[in-house]
Length: 457
Image (tube, rainbow, N blue to C red; front, side, top):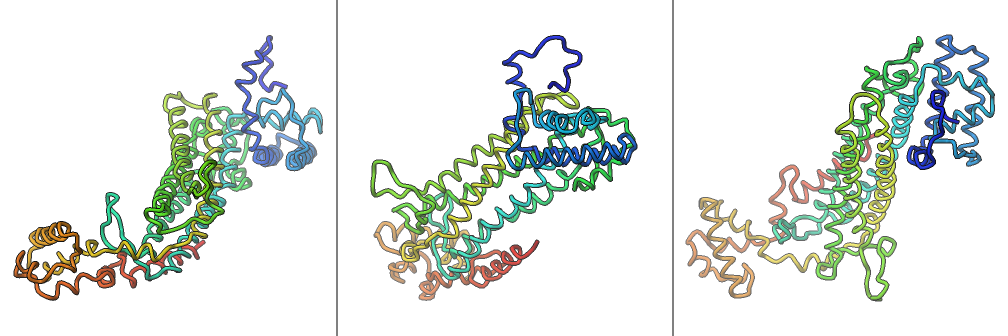
């Protein structure tokens, strides 16, 4: 059954048929296709194009098709080049020639655009909940370790002490921004192209706004030429997924490093690790490594579709068939990646003793510079003086606390015995009480903000 075969005398080459066939991947649009067809049938009845009894017959047939598809009883045929062809063919088998009236005033161009938007609208809540699950794990870990300190890192080097809770929450907020972008994206997904037909708009007196509302869209599209060509909403979803993948990758990157024997800050649960086929002692953080790897896949899906779209002329082109596989792959990848990330974070074991062992007083060099600045020494000069003290301590293989007061005073008379009080991790943490800082009080406020976000709809 070819929906377009009337003007063709010859048959389609077997390899061309396979090349043209999108059913292997667009069959997952089946329920959306039936929903769109049911709404279109109602619109045709309302417009007086279909008699009420014809509309009822079509509705009954479409519901039967939907039942077969849902129960996996639908018999696809080699002639079904896409899900739209398959549904229409089966409808004709069930109700006869009246099925041919369903496509009046409609094109597969606006039909597939509608189906894809419906499919994505169905999946946005699942994506949102997946991100929330990861956030819940991060918040739970932050709550469980409110006062535990460890080195913060810049350039891969120990920098200043921070609270572990602060680190967990540092991965909460990028995900919160992802959710804000997802909510904004939904506004542009929830636009109904049905009624745009092939490119010029349907000639039938269809109430497109009522049709849009019936399908759960916010509004009808503004321009028929744009509506059948628009894949911006898929690009946005792929861009959103790529950025989310990057955020998960950065979280994973820290946990891969921190779970190594050299760090030992954390241990992944056995459920989210694997072993070596040759080395019996190995416990590999493969869940986190795969999260890093999947980010590349997600970015690739975005680049693939952008490359497809960039040279297309106006309205529909068959190139647009290439939009679905990257979309479906991104949705599938994120669904599983978010489950793994949430489970791994929630079951993570923290090793406080290993973190405590890395809190040497070199992390407090900035505190010493601030101490001098508070005594009237310009900060740039204070920075240089403390740098000299660091060099002296390193040369002797000791810490900053181990240098004698006379050695400090030899560098500058601005040093006095109060310098040793500055070399305290708890004091250093407590001083950073500004909003967003790592002081226990500031992190407690931040944690309350994060929990409020989790409680929001």
